[in-house]
Image 1 (cartoon, rainbow, N blue to C red):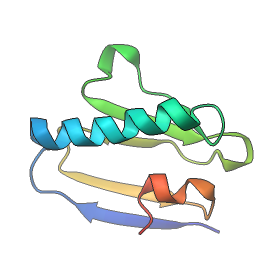
Image 2: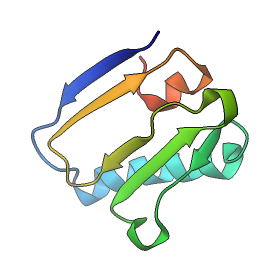
Image 3: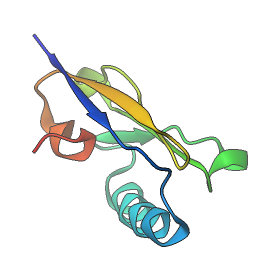
Length: 88
């Protein structure tokens, strides 16, 4: 059984923060897309959102992160993708 993480972020990411997040995500996609994650970020929105899910048995609920968000929740089923989905 999974669980839900909730967090609040009271301001949108600034360009520097978002650039760091995107750099990390691009590294993950470059090295793991198709093996443990599936990049589902729409090409035309790649500068403003990150979208991914697991692959095969690790595919559960799609993770979506917007550059300009103020509230988010994240449902997780204990799996290999927990680290990339926000498990600390």
